[in-house]
Image 1: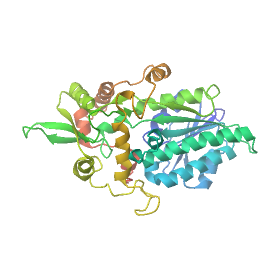
Image 2: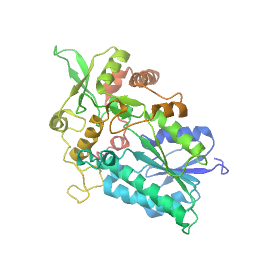
Image 3: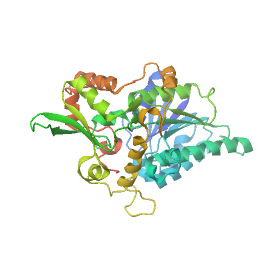
Image 4: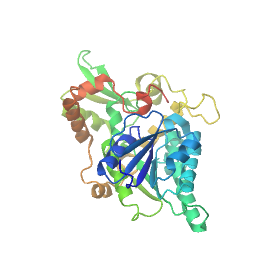
Length: 373
């Protein structure tokens, strides 16, 4: 591993979003990648795994030391809203302290703010990231204006804002997980998404495969972009009627979307059925002042997407800009399904139907055997 390459620290580098970012940056041979992780294993070329945890200031200080840049994605489904906010502040401050030049905040749309602070859209895991991005952008501008002391006061900050991963639509243990049910004839099996999306809503899904390209674009252009730039990425605004149609087109098997109310979704038929009263964040104690229940968190989340149909509502994207940045990006759920079907065939995992039936997981909290929500 060449020490002449600039080092990028990745916090969250072993999670669903971090993996494609690490892969893209490592393959570029432009950087040395340092990943802060609790469970170091054999790294690929140009990647160094550093044992540690984002809740340890000693670990953070070691991780940021001599790093040229950083991509920081604190696991809100581990920390919960309140702790994520605190450790976002400390990550930023320690990065400044250690002289980091360019800092990317892994962001989610600030649904509560976008909705005019209407509590209907209150969603802890999104609001924590969005709220702290607003703070970070303002804090960094103030640091530069005041010329405060410290080696990192010239640090630029940026945000990469992603939507929900479309990969979750064929995975278990997610808010958009499908189920295999019997059809109306009681015999034929049907892949079914029972979700409270309404008839006019849409989810601005992001394909994980493309996230690394967008992160790489920001790192390559760090001198050109303005301090405080926010790149909002996505595949497209998708209704789950279209998800079901795409699944049928790719697999030749039956699929359907069924709109359900929140009581049904959390009670018996959704991806989080039966755990609505659990805290969002496995580090959060149930009943603690900062706890938000899964039900409250994802009720606000679904209301945001119910209000985002047609890329004209609450959450918007500039897809023409994304076409310029990444001409080869995944644009439709059918394209995503075809890629996943080919990948499953190549890996000997059967068809896309078999992938759904296997109950595989994409989120790190599920792979680790911890239910954070």
